Image (cartoon, rainbow, N blue to C red):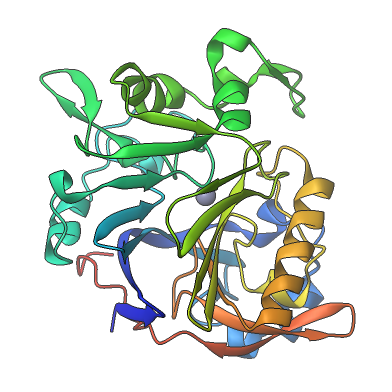
Length: 313
Ligand SMILES: [Zn+2]
């Protein structure tokens, strides 16, 4: 099953990409080999390759149907993008739109696109290449982007990021992501910028949870007695449920990201909300509980463990 229903909202997972990404020691600098070994029984094989110490991740889109509208949460890497700092995502041809169509969604059917944050693996399918130009993939959609991220990643604002190799403007660190995946939908008048919070409909609302990026956000679902939190990149591995202080090298502000992760996981534990991170393979989402000052997994969601992608993956 790749669709579950919470309250009056249907949630479908559409996977764009699936692979071992990089060693956990590089991605999670504050995690220890011991932490991974202690949790190996439930992290393997879906989330961690012990032999190579690699994190296994998906890039995927959550498709929501709510109040008669179709809402996409995150739009993956996209086809044909030039990504020199992530070669495996350069000039991708993933078949994503075919899998979206198999889930019953044509581009013109999409009413709302949520980018939980502005990173190249969350805004990619905002646009597609037509006759050499980047055009909005979803011609009838309103794209919701936090103003804090729009301003931060906009090359016109020339924000500077500290890096181990020296300071670079964040626009350069992000490659041409803003120009090929954000600016075209903004120029088309399809972007709604929001601050602090934004109500999508009576079941769904956006709220800032900054740190991974300044405008990182979560989508909160409350429908009947059911609750869910689409948490974007607050969690890249379920290890971060058991070890919530482990953040990734991918965050702009690791301490702030950790505070946001703890706050949202506390809410999930206290309200029984299903937690849906952006990148989890396997069952893709889970309910959590408090365990001392940390958290533990209560149960996985009912999404299939199989990825539903090309056999070549
Ligand atoms: Zn991501």
